[in-house]
Image 1 (tube, rainbow, N blue to C red):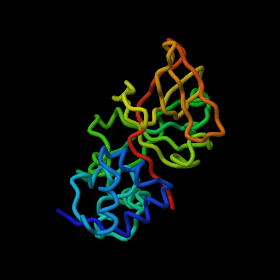
Image 2: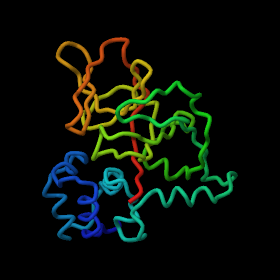
Image 3: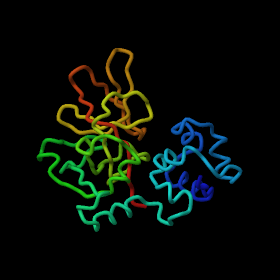
Length: 222
């Protein structure tokens, strides 16, 4: 098993504005386990793939095989590959920015623009059929610092039943597209939660909101 470079792990945790405890909760492990990886006391982890996903980087970067932590650099390289390559897939995306606060998603026809990606790279995040995965570019600040303006989001539309509070969901409500955390409310509604404390939570009830899919990857230029 490849060994994790502690210095790289520590740097990414800081750059992603996460605490060791928050990262540990995302992975379902203890905070001391993260600390041991950073210090070098432990260098191997069965959570390498999940760790890379949580930090929006590649496993290869965490183990020192590549020097670029940014997944976007890999995405750009995929565009240069021939579309007939076995590892190449074209994914649809919305023509309009997916609003982190809210943006109208029916102003223009959706899913008309195709982008070329590596199939194996997409499979790090979801096993859903490719035709049920799409990309969107975020806009707004309500989900900062978890999601920044102009981040690229990979959304799996086969996942439409919220089960965990720390996940992000693409939803539509009253013609607006949003990215939010979802939590059940005591009165039977669903609470739409922003990460940014400057934004108040909203409530949605039966028929007001449609879950489009779960955000399974966040890609950012750094």
